[in-house]
Length: 98
Length: 371
Image (cartoon, rainbow over the protein chains, first blue to last red):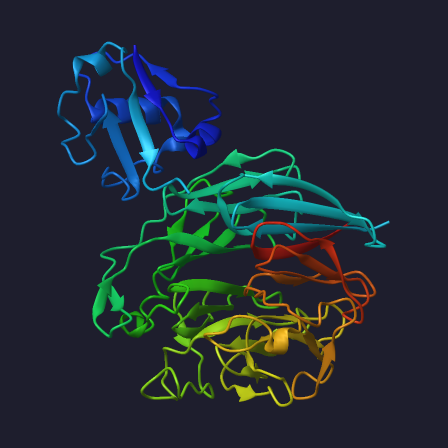
């Protein structure tokens, strides 16, 4: 089970209280997580990546096991710790703090 | 008894204020969509409980929400705003060409006859329309063909902020863009022509009488006289008696002719309201005094309305979509400030009071008169 942590704005939009859990069959990549996330919560389409180009929005970043993977290929395999659910896949709004 | 509902968009959510026809006691709900910028929220004139919302942030982009019950519940709708064909370029601040890029929806204008049809004015400036209740949006690309390469962003971005639908002629649409000017369609939005003759921008444009490029801040009109248009330009308050074919200045005795909103009394087509702001760099009222100015002569003879408004140390701004009128008698006037106050007058502007004081910065105010 993949664990995904959304920023507060997107949790409100998707009406989820806590982290999201997704069951991915196949390779666990950023692209696969976002595909399933958008399929499960259609309201999130366009909020994390552009709906047409599927490019990451400029002020959104992705983290896995403490590493910023925002600029890596969406097809790259994520670490086992994310694939097994030991660590979450984290989506944040860049510079979202004070 | 009639009621009034105010739809207030702010930097951090939407608020809905309601009162009975006395307009003395107001109930407030919100924030709806807390934390999101609500550039505009407006109800259908055909079905006032059908309300459309532009919700956005720079982080997570644009959403459109719809309510079918006057704002009690909301449903996310279609949010794909794709320019027709190859978007091309427009002029950038430094005069170079810059690609057209969608940023946000500034203004939603529901149809006068169909609750499922809504026009959307967006940044970078373009006009979109839905005919299925906001499930899908299509651009009306004829607008950007009206010398779009020469348009440029104003300080707030290249936004299409004004959409006027003509109650007597469904083929006629007037729109305005900062900093491109005013444009009119006489064929239902298929094509547009610039209507900027008479506007003068000596401090902003190399050619002060240019056909396009003027920084129009807002246009208003009375539904009974659709050919009479009132404009608050970057500088100058203007009037046209021929649907924009020619404009004349009517600023006269205003303490500053810079400002953002302009609106028309619901029952007196020659009574108009503006809120003077000091200058393009000093976005606050002259002398720290928040004054609404009213002209009962369609411009040129202005009186200050100050009763109930702060007359010292006031340095808020009032943005272009943040003033509205109801259609009760006497006419109610409302405006919101960047300081979070919403001021209301239930006597056509003679007296004012803050019906809420501490909202986030107000971006838009729309008044609905309900049965």
